[in-house]
Length: 83
Length: 156
Image (tube, rainbow over all chains, first blue to last red; front, side, top):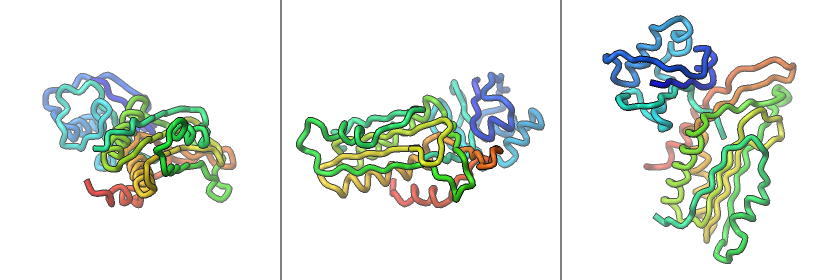
């Protein structure tokens, strides 16, 4: 599974993207955020307030209850500030 | 669904020319009665900022603005729709975003342009980072609740 990060999520985790092997227990976006937070200090620092993290699966917004099975690319980022 | 307007969506580093974009919507046709444009510019926040750095999610930025544009084209009888969003380092006074909408009558054009901007601000994957006047790097701009509120006023 490819994970991509943007803005301060990218800066805090320290990389723009990575490939991860997810355990079968990670079924939803919320599970993924919980699993990532346990990977190290930089992840904990980026994701300590998971409710503010926005997520897109294959370039479409999803909420944290969304199932991630079959996803090719999951993006994590802060609330958007374009326009 | 009016189904007439085919949205033009561009994500680019380069500047855009508002007059040229209006001309694209009106040239060679006699049915356009109204064009509404909105331009968003980089401002200096009373001298505090020297630049804004715009990061985006390539691929999703185009797709998401395309989805918002298609939604607008379904809600209002539009003749044309152009949305351009820049990325990279922009200075105060530089253009950031353009929404241009053409229609037979003004009401549809005004409303669609407003709708596009409200959703573009809260759903298009762009993030602004501040560069301060003293040369140091500021922080990431926080999302404003007022922008979320503005998008919520449009009923599904």
